[in-house]
Length: 354
Ligand code: TYD
Image 1 (cartoon, helix red, strand yellow):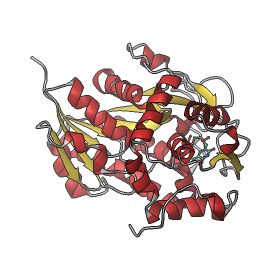
Image 2 (cartoon, rainbow, N blue to C red; image 1 turned 90 degrees about the horizontal axis):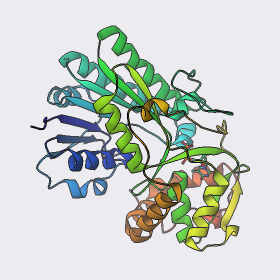
Image 3 (cartoon, helix red, strand yellow; image 1 turned 30 degrees about the vertical axis):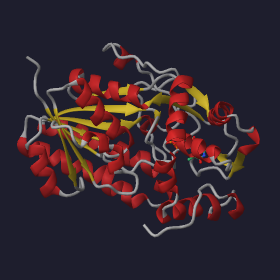
């Protein structure tokens, strides 16, 4: 008989978290999945609307920093998968505080709840950005942590806490360090959904600096199966890199998007670079692959699927781009910081109060 597990997915109304909750429910019909989400700007019930009727699914609106709520939830679950985080590097440059609050303090609250009740497995969803820039070769899990942005420093800090709870209190923990992820439902501030949606509206694609920075792109469903593998089979106290080996320069990604959409390359607009911009990320994933995991999506296949989704879900992203919060951020980041003229808005629609 299949084993019933109760899994708490924090941040499960966000991009990767919502795909992961769906993946668990469809792959393990006996599992109970609870999504906890604060529904801040990037989390949305629309990402999990299809799960609401599933009898094995529950949604809880709450904040990972709320110790009372988290203790009650953690108590009733076997596994905790922590996606709850502020994730956008550019926002961390403008406002580091919220990253410390959610990514670091939130992890601490969850870990404390796990410590109190015991017997839980805690999976921390982290990022390959904790290594800082990897100018050559591939970082394996023993490479030093050299985060360079407030975002990656927050995620590295959370990892250190997770490991401290493993060493000190014997908590059963595993950590995944994922590479740049793309796919449907990603908030259109990250490069791929921003560029795809801008291109669909014939707006400029704001490319930072010379566009030669390199990222390793993984399709969101591949990222989910990797987390699933580590959750079920990862050794306690162990870290696992997650990446698909699609190392591409940003300019090449922008050009591919335009090519697939039949739009002119002239839409690419060079803008002021991000301060402290990591030039390259690259991870060695042999530890994860030794557990039998491998990515299924070639980059172009995943990108086409992603573009198709944004093409057929205009309302989803146009609503976001029409919000005052979104427009305020893009104005502050792309226009006031320098680079794009006000006539080259990266968003569309009139400003609405959120
Ligand atoms: P992003 O999606 O923000 O992920 P991360 O910074 O966590 O890697 O950015 C991916 C790459 O794209 C990164 O090198 C920064 C670059 N980029 C642009 O050139 N223009 C943009 O408008 C954005 C958002 C990102």
